[in-house]
Length: 115
Image (cartoon, rainbow, N blue to C red; front, side, top):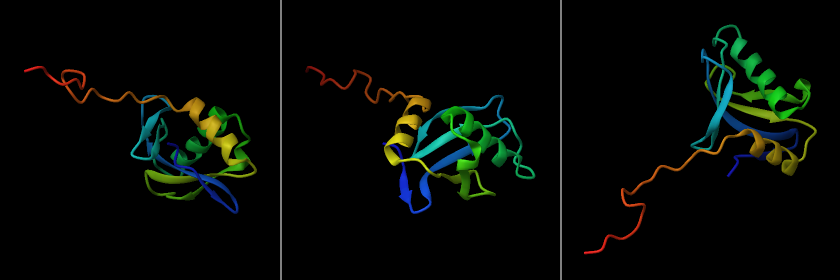
């Protein structure tokens, strides 16, 4: 389930940023956070700028509609998207977040073993 929250200023969602990665990519939904790998270092706001630019490009929305409302100096951030409906943003995010496969928790595929 996507962690979206509607506020009076727009729709927010939490992300976890991994700076200094080999490439920019969204790796999935982990513990309620959209995990984003960025090539920029976390210095002088470069990772924040790259995060917003990357999301703007992937979501195909103007950059001036995206902002960081919490976590500017943290890896965990809250991104806000203005002038967009909840369902519309949910649809866009679902398209760009890769499906995270569930690990097989049982060696036998979850089937009861016969005695």
